[in-house]
Image (tube, rainbow, N blue to C red):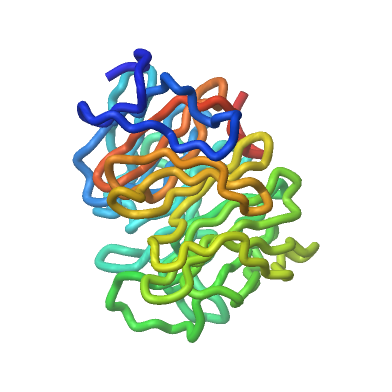
Length: 313
């Protein structure tokens, strides 16, 4: 299925983006396209320096989708139960590897060269293994924020909390904050002064939060920007060049992309055919939103452009 014009279309079912502002973030005639399916549970898309989209299949592999050919191939198999992915300034792939069978519970780095060796950036705090690194984001200095909840996996927990960690550019690991329950997706504002965090507890708080970023990487000044109540909260998110948040949340008929202002005002909703897990802007114009959802990878044209401090030209 290509980018032919029409309403938002999923397998013959027509959906329209539900806007709350006059300026829509999605063209009225845009099309949401499934570009790959067949995973166990897709997650953590990242846009690479080769203009390909890398994403995790929680079934324990990292996949590579090439928009130029339409082909999806294994990049790393097994993938250490990777979840969130990101790229650093040198084009290395940074992966949050989670728990469960085959999970390594660590943060790793590798180049995109075939057979490249992995570098372990961090696998513990105070000699205690992480719970299950979930999602990550790099700051302008190359430091790495990552969330460390435990949703699945029977491995004994060594830490007595689930928080957000920061790996400083020199390699030191600190606790950025413990002020959250089941921290999940996260993203930084364009100026790097605000970190947005998904607090997504299956039986507790389901909030979109913001924190102020300190000079040492610590987070403070917790604010609740949006409360999803009993609805499935934010899983993953990314931002556009105006600082708006594109967040994956909801289930079934409420599953989709929720667009928020930097202050947490809900602006628009785009439904997805499967429950979404994460999203990233891609394409040479940064106007294509790639979405991992259920067993698949989707994409949709937008009326905006994404932001990432280390994106390729």
